[in-house]
Image 1 (tube, rainbow, N blue to C red):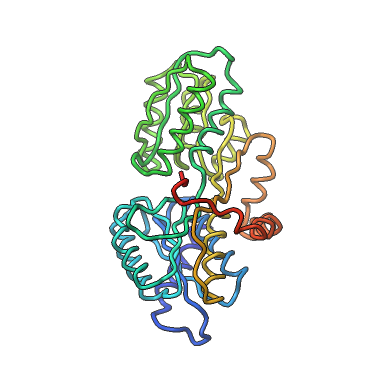
Image 2 (image 1 turned 60 degrees about the vertical axis):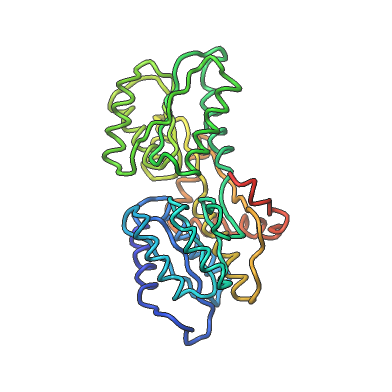
Length: 344
C-alpha cells in the first residue's frame, strides 16, 4: 500500500511539468533515496501530510525505484527545474549532492536536508533529522537492562550501509552504551549487512551461526530488524535481537517477543516536519529558518507495540495519532532549532 502511494506521488511529479501552476500555488519538491524501503515510504507519506496541513502548495515527490545515488542525482536535477519554491532532500550519499545543492542554494532556492546531514559545501541551512547517536544508545540501553549487571561476552552489530553518517552514528551510540554500562562486553562490528532483504537475511543468519554464544545482535537499518527476528526464529537461541524502523514484520516480532524492541526514527513525522516547514516558508514567501530540528525517536517495546501497530495500520491512523502532537511541536518550533554543527 505504501509503495503504491509513493509511486502515485512520483508519477504526479513527473507529469506536472515546470513553470507556475494554473492556481499560482508554490511548487516544492521532496527527493528521496528510493521507493522500495519502508523508511522512504514513511517519509514520503509524512511529507504529503505536511503539505496537506499547510494547503495551497503543490508537492512533487521523486525517487529511484531502488537505492541508486546517481539516479537520484539526476531526478534531483529535474526537481531543481520543476520545484522552484523549495526542495527537501533525503539521500544516502551526501557527498554526491554537494555541487547540485550548492548550485540551487546559489539560485536562492529553499533547501532542507532530511534524515542525512548535508555534506560540507552543500550550503543547506536547515536540517531535519534524528539524534541518531542518542537513538542507538537508547536501543542498546534497553538491551543492557535485559542482561546481567556483570555480563561479559560478545555483542554483534550490523549496518546495511557502512559509511552513511546516520547509520554510523546509531552504531556509535550502541558502542558508547556498552562501554559505559557493560565494559566486560566485547562489541563486534558493525558488519556490513547489505540493503537487499534476501542478502541481508543471509548475512545475519551467517553472523548468528558464527557467534552462537553472543549476548545480542543489533542492527542499524530496517532490513536488519525483521531479518534478525527471522534469523532467530530459524536458528533459535536466547540471545537478544533488535534494530530500527517499523516494518510490519518488525512490529510482529516485538509483539511475539522474538525482538525485545524496535527503535523508530519516526520517519513519517520527520517527513511531515520537513515539508511543513518548507511549505509554510514557500507559501509566505519567506526564507527558511536555519539550524537542526530533531523530530525525536520512539522506542517500541511490548508495552506500546499494540498502540504503534494500530497507528501504522493506515495513513489516516497516522494522521490522527500525530495531529495534536504535531501542533504542539510546531507551537515551539523556533525554540527547537539547534546549531547545524551539533547534528548527529
